[in-house]
Amino acid sequence: MQPYDYPYREPSPRLRPGIWLPVAAVLVLLLLLIPSGLLLYHYWPHGGSGLDPSAQPREVAVRGPLYKNEADLAALYEKTLPSVVHVNNLSEQVDRFSLNVQQVPRGSGSGFVWDKQGHIVTNYHVVEGANAVQVVLSDGSSYKAANVFVYPEKDLAVLKIDAPESKLVPIPIGTSHDLKVGQSAIVIGNPFGLDGTMTNGIVSALGREIESPANRRIQGVIQTSAPINPGNSGGPLLDSDGRLIGVTTAILSPSGTFAGIGFAIPVDEVNRVVPQLIAKGKIERPRLGVELADGSQVGQEGALVLNVTPNSPAAKVGLRPTRRSESGRRALGDIIVAVDEEKIKSANDLFDVLEHHKAGDTVTLAVLRDGQRVEVTATLAAGS
Image 1 (tube, rainbow, N blue to C red):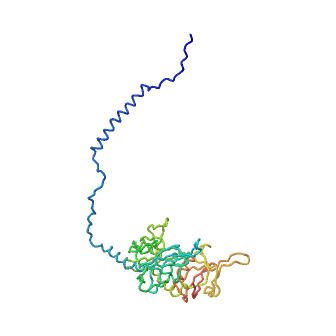
Image 2: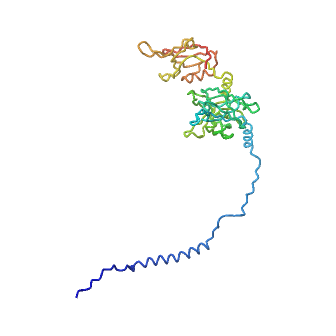
């Protein structure tokens, strides 16, 4: 008899005995942790929501009067603010849809009222390249500058606005030749179009030298620790009596933000330049009639004469220009090494010395000519 062939069936899966032990341990642990957590939460001290419905404003502490230096600064600010203005440099742009020409701000700075006739003083670099200039007075009234007179060599500009005399408060003028390092220096301006701001510090150094937008030296510059932001450019630097001692012009900073060193054009220079710009629209500098290069280019201190203008004071006294011979060799011209016994080390030195003269003045020039020192006397002419 053949054995019966039963079909094969997979045995039913069963848990292995070794699995029950860890499963049971986990269940026991959970049974112990849940009640323990509830008891801990119930008995642990806590602050609830942290809200206190009875909270009230604190009582204000009474303060005494301002210290004298605080009161003095506050009074100075109130007195000077009406003299400080905001200056907008406007450029023209064409609207791409309407093709209308619009004036939009391209830069801004500060300035101050010079006189009751509506003359405003600021930096040249604040208005440089402007199609139009807008002046905003401290009361918010706005005026377009009718005239703009500039002197890039000293980074100064004078604007003329047609504002009522009642709105114009000229700033008091001080002096800069008698400043002392350590005395107070206060800056008031409108940085970034914000309403009047004040910062204060001290005169950190005197007689500094910076470069103007015209690549000429500005000498006698005031260095101050009073914070100067880019929007303060063209605003006043004041002494503790509220008098103008300089026009803020630049900062020394690797990042473009104030880093403790700011510069201002001394007011003695401002008070010399501004009246000339108002009277003539330009600065008439005494003219010698030469084109110069630094003598260091040929290994010699002084100002090397490259060219001489015909019929100029230099031509009349026979100053020699640099020229080339028929063989192509260069013959050096005269090298000016002194003016009225004041030593000249470079072309900039000569410009600086001549700026302290006026047309019609007679000066004695010491020049090196073919290795020999020669002196000539010239009468300066008017120039610009």
